[in-house]
Picture (cartoon, rainbow, N blue to C red):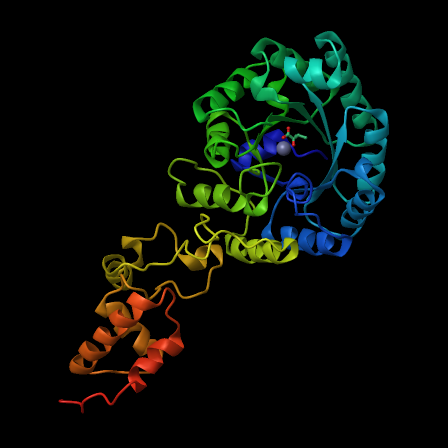
Length: 397
Ligand code: KIV
Ligand code: ZN
C-alpha cells in the first residue's frame, strides 16, 4: 500500500521523510560506512520517521549494499531509494528496496529551463515524456512512487504544472517540490503548493517539501510549504545536506510541537528521541553540532545571564518555549559564567551538596565573579575550589 493521502488527511498527519542517509550524506565530509548507516537507520526508526531515504543505489556498489541491508533489516519506516529518470537507476533502486515490507522509489528529473538546457540537454517536451516514462517504470516495480521535478522553485510555473500533471497521471503517489538551490521565500513556496494542489488528480497524491538552506530559510520554507498544503516534509537530522544543508528534522519537528496552535497536525515523531538522534549522527559523521544550533545545540537550553537564570529557576517557561526533556536533552541548563547571578550560584552549590549561609554566599559570589572574569567556562570543580580557597568565616547563624 502506498502512503495513503486520505489516511494522512484523516489523521491530519505530517509525514516525516528523512534524507540524512541520502541528501545528508552528500554533505562534504559526511560520508558514512555501511555499519554506520545501518546503525543510524535503526535510530531513525526509533525516532519514528515515516520514510527513510536510505541512499542512491546506482551511485556505487556500497550505496546499493547499504540500501539493500536497511531494506532487509530496518522495520517500521518505509524504505526509499533515489533514482534519476533513467531505466538503469530505477531498476537498481527497485532491487535495492525490494526486501523492505514497505518501499518507495523516488525518481527525479530537472524541470527548470537552466538545468534542462545546460545539464540535461533536453527540450521541455522531451522532459515531459521522460518524467512520465520514469514514473510508469518505477510503478511497474513498486506501488509507492515519489517524483521530484528538480529545481522546481526556479521552474516556469506553467511548465511545473504540466510536469506534475504528467507524473500524477503516470501514477506518482507523492510529488516533491524541491527548492534545490535554496532560492525560494516562504510566501512564494506556499503559493506553489496552493497552485499545484488545484490540479486535477492532486487529491490523490501527497505533496512534499524539500528545502535547502542556502539563504537560511529551509525550516521557514518547510513550514510555509505545510501552510500551502504539503503533508510530507523531507528533512535531515542536524540539517546536513548539499551545500548549506537541508531543513533540519529536529527544527521542523520542534516547531510543529511547540506551535500546535498554528500547525494543528499529528506526526509519528517521538520527540524525546530528537537529541539522542542528533548526538548519534554528530558522533558518526564526526561533526559536532554548533552550540547555538536550534533545539539540539549545547546552548539551546543554556541560560547564562543572571536575569534569565533567575526567571528559569522560578519558572522555566519564563525563558523556555519547550522543556529540554521534551526533546530528550538531559544536561544541566543553568550555565555559570560572568553574567550569572547569586541565585544561580546558590542553586548550583545546593546541587553540589553545599548549603552556604547568606554571609558565606556573599563571599563565594565575590570569588566567583572574579574567577568568571578570568575564565570562560566554569566547571563544578571550580565552584568547589572556591570553597577551599581560604577559610570561609564561621557561620554566623
Ligand atoms: O535538492 C534536490 O533537488 C534533491 C532532489 C534529488 C530531490 O535532492
Ligand atoms: Zn536536495
